[in-house]
Every structure is written in structure tokens, then in C-alpha cells.
Image (cartoon, rainbow, N blue to C red; front, side):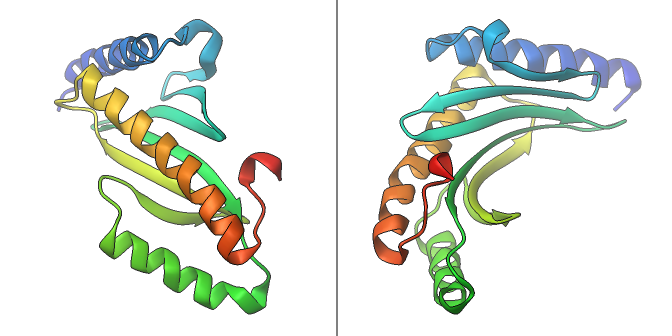
Length: 152
């Protein structure tokens, strides 16, 4: 991809993210948390889920990512069982997203190249990540006694 093509796709990606945010009732101007030449990010609150919807770019690629913290990690003694549960869910239940660990938090993340995206797909990704985080924060708190990331 040429620099001109990447620049055009970057502008289109920004427009698509803003359209998707408006479609869920948010103002992109008040939701923006980072606006830099190679990274654009919006903060979104859905239920108890705080979602970061972002686009990043390098010389040849642009990616769109939605990520939401779910819960804090359990104590060391419970982590092996907890990690096994996350991996099992990733393999059996998760579609278009996965659980991961970032610092001391479990997150749910979905990422894909920006090329070919449309606003409805971005909205679906955003809603799916938010719903997954909102569902599993309560479930994991009950099963493992962990703290909701939104309360940590």
C-alpha cells in the first residue's frame, strides 16, 4: 500500500469510527481520548464495560481494535485455574474476540485490519466487546471472587 493509499484509508477509518459511534448515540468529539497522527481512540461506556475503540497505523497497515477491561486477576493461588478457564472460553465460546491479560487485568479484545470495514461491522465489534465484558465481569466475580475492572 502506498503512503497516499494509507493516508486515504486512515481518513476513511476515522470517518467510519465516528459514524459507528454516532449510530450508538455517542458524540465522537466528546468521546475522543487520543487523537494523534498514528493513533485515534475513543472511550465508550456500555453497561459496566469501559471500551476503548481505537485505530492505529504504521507505514503500510491500519488496524481497528476494541478492548475492554473485565476484571482484576485473582490471587496467585487461583490463577492457574482462572487462566485455564479463559483459554477454554477462548476456544469454545468466544467469537470475533478473545480474553487476554494486560497488566493486572483480564481484558476482552477484538482487532482486525481497517481495509474493507464498514460502520455496521465497527458497531458490531464495539457492541460485542462491551456485552462480553459486561457479562463476564459478573460471572468471574461470582466464580473467582475477583474485582470488576470498573471498580478496581
